[in-house]
Image 1 (tube, rainbow, N blue to C red):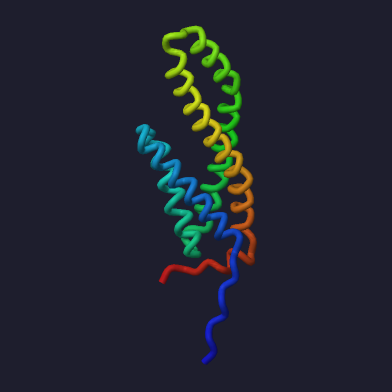
Image 2 (image 1 turned 45 degrees about the horizontal axis):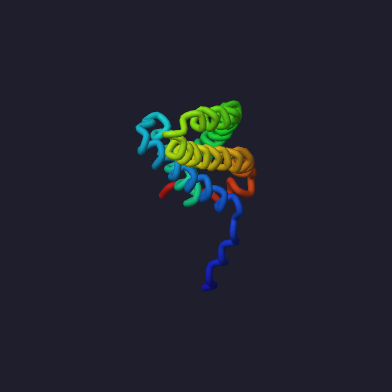
Length: 150
């Protein structure tokens, strides 16, 4: 008997791990702020990504659809976020107009701006990654790596 051939590193599985981690981070944020619908969506993505990482056949097609929906969500919500870009300058000017409150307001605005930028960066990463993964999971070579449940 020969030993089974070692598995090669599959970039699509690494991509699924990244999506899984981003969905988990999002789920924590949605739980924190009570965004229950988004929390349910993040949980579904986590389950599907876990099934994909484990190469379960039941997860491949629903995961492709979920990744396309995630890409669409990242594009739409990222576009809405970009439309708010100038509001930070306006809020900063209003905070500076109130000298007695300027320091705490500016600190709070800076924290909000960092969180906003982090969310925008995650969406910018997620958009091409989700599209690439959806395409990659449809390729015959990747589809052949998935196995039916025993």
